[in-house]
Length: 117
Image (cartoon, rainbow, N blue to C red; front, side, top):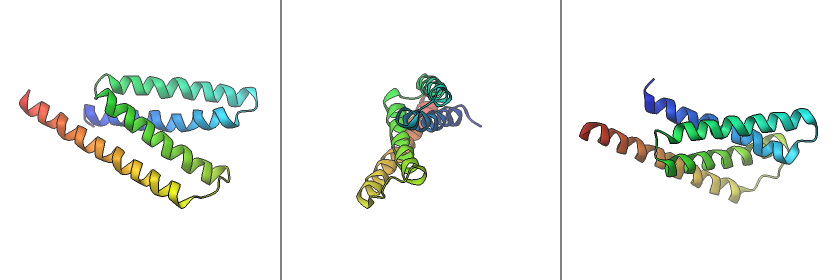
């Protein structure tokens, strides 16, 4: 696995833990769920900061927020009976297309820098 792949994996992990802590902030109602929420915050931001050391910070943050937003909305629909709103799902799909585009463009820029450098 290449260095860049590992860094992108960190962003995906950070976004997954973002989903956990955002849901935790809304639904935590006992000590254990608050502890899990706090741990998820720490892991999420640690992975985000670690990836930001090697990838463009703006892209890292956009991908992190985009994946976290999509994951949170989908989790709320799947696990907490949030009503399904087609417009919301279409907008999240558009957001994910943008996130994937940012990732692809960033990968191409990194490859160009490796060749030129």
